[in-house]
Image 1 (cartoon, rainbow, N blue to C red):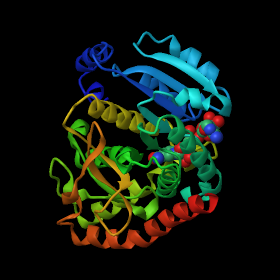
Image 2 (image 1 turned 90 degrees about the horizontal axis):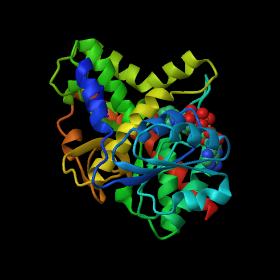
Image 3 (image 1 turned 90 degrees about the vertical axis):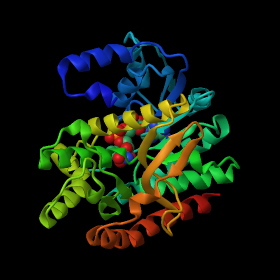
Amino acid sequence: LRASFAPRAEKQAQNFENRLQPRASTFKVAVLGAAGGIGQPLALLIKMSPLVSALHLYDVANVKGVATDLSHCNTPSEVLEFTGPSELSNCLKGVDVVVIPAGVPRKPGMTRDDLFNINANIVKTLVEAVADNCPDAFIHIISNPVNSTVPIAAEILKQKGVYNPKKLFGVTTLDVVRANTFVAQKKNLRLIDVDVPVVGGHAGITILPLLSKTRPAANFTGQEIEELTVRIQNAGTEVVEAKAGEGSATLSMAYAAARFVESSLRALDGDTDVYECSFVQSELTELPFFASRIKLGKNGVEAVISSDVQGLTEYEAKALEALKPELKSSIEKGVAFAQKQA
Ligand code: NAI
């Protein structure tokens, strides 16, 4: 994906064609919530991947049209549709990567935590089915609040006896995508070159962009750091307000999720140089889950990059301490929900 968004037009066209060439090894990907605002553009972007042989689209309604429409694209993967709980098992059998954007999005005035009651139950039901049908798959959780839905998923997988912490991911790629975009704009850098690690969690102040670790190295004034940090933390709300009641980020989220899927597939395909930020089980801090850069391999998380949280600036160190109580309580809320249902 990154290559196909290279700045020069002719390069873009060339990469686009290259991307459509079938590859030796290919994988099956399922999207649960595929008829939604994120699900549809995400399915389209995954349909473009040469690493995918089958794309399984599941939703409780309206997925047949999405699948039929997508199936007419002349890219290698086969598209299959699955509607309603009775077809969920078949959707998941033999799948390598499961992406979960099912649930309700925010409206103006709502926090991600306001979504807890509805989305917690949806994630629980879907992850139970994943545990029963494809326990070895990489699981990408997009449904908010990610700070709680990932711990819920972990507990459900534990209850089913199939929890593999290396294969459960909270998708925080959008925070990185936003940080890269805003920093490149502010500093007049080439977008394609910029990489800002974002750590912590995926809500408000728990989102901590580490601007001091921006690559290529860039200098920021105190005011720029404050403005960029706050903008990255509130970028989701920027979209929620601009859409004025019509939902939250869908297109940029689909782009970010597709990037994370592509990275996972490259890792599964044997690429040994794949790094992304993600909210995963972690020993980087005293919290049981934490977002940071990770190295992805065939078996999932191969390494958590600890250097990200070392040598922080005073601003970052303070912000890290400040986010911990909120992140801890969101994690505990998720764990308590799942344990109460057991
Ligand atoms: P949407 O309402 O447009 O789509 C959600 C889809 O989920 C609908 O098609 C709906 O039918 C489906 N769905 C509901 N219950 C289901 C179930 N039990 N099984 C399968 N599918 C079910 O919402 P949108 O905008 O696509 O957002 C989806 C989720 O993604 C929300 O929770 C939102 O907060 C979250 N999100 C996460 C982001 C992140 O960075 N991780 C960024 C933006 C949104």
